Image 1: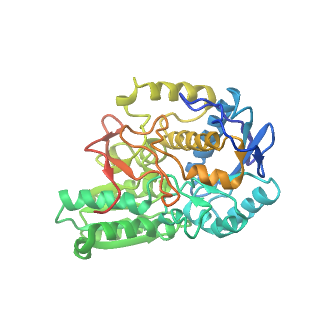
Image 2: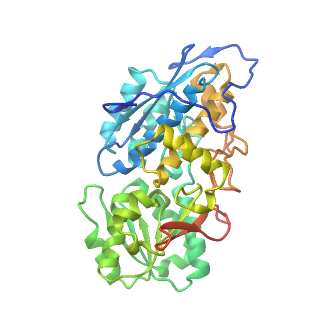
Image 3: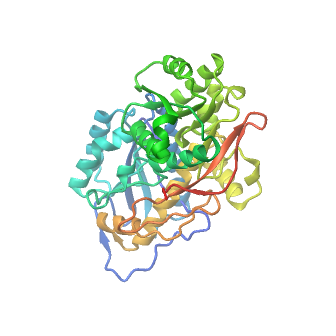
Length: 409
């Protein structure tokens, strides 16, 4: 349930997974945020501000934890999630994170959202030995255990995702003239670097224009006009949903119809496509690793049936079409798996040890053929994706081709 900017959450059971903690020979140990009846996690989410469309992720995670708690929790402990609004503003993220650590005494900072916000708190959390776990951003720097042992990503990295698009462009559009719109921060520059690296030497001639924007900008209209003027026939949109929708709409309205690639973080029918316009979005290509709730291909699967049942019970006021809810559902399952593996050793150190010991974990609603794997030297849980293309007639993204590795050969 929501209380102001805090989401009080108890958790519940992952589909098909036992909620009992794995047996452990280790003597029971409790770290900060753990009692005999409770496990306290914290996070920051943009419930307001330019990235507020991502706020549904925190609500979905809270709802998933509600389900887990109602089924008995983790070895009798209920999960409490303290989710604070940071408005996607790094200074506010720092303020809220310090409160979570120093006043709420959380076990871990779980799935805090955004590249700039997480950048602002990374050194602080690592200096305090607090897990910054499964961060909701694909920045490549979240997989650097040698320098930031307490920070781990979750989704395919932004650079890795760009590698996938670059592979497809080189194969299918060898004479492409590429125009790029990117957010002028670590988030946008990470994606941009991935595309440049993925194209290799060909990128020097293929990329004809790069236009940046700030999250404080009212629109990206002028950038889209400039990209059209460059003669680009391939458009790569590195933007969060608000600006991705603006870009789609403006390109259509000025008669610019390039082949469009849009980053996964905006590949949501509810958050991006509908605001942009269904007809204006036809043919947009993105990449995915989760089952799209708008895709009827999954309707009769056990995963989707259980997801819809959960959604209607625990998120009755949410948008079933919004894939960000699936993201939260998947990420929460991963956190539950880590807590189960911790057994009776619920310390911050063991949380990181278990997070770095996930083997072929396949949470419900993850695409077939894609699994989560980590190790002490691999802090990138997901490394594969499948290309998807939006079809305005069916009003959904349709998968095509095979699962593609984000690694450059």
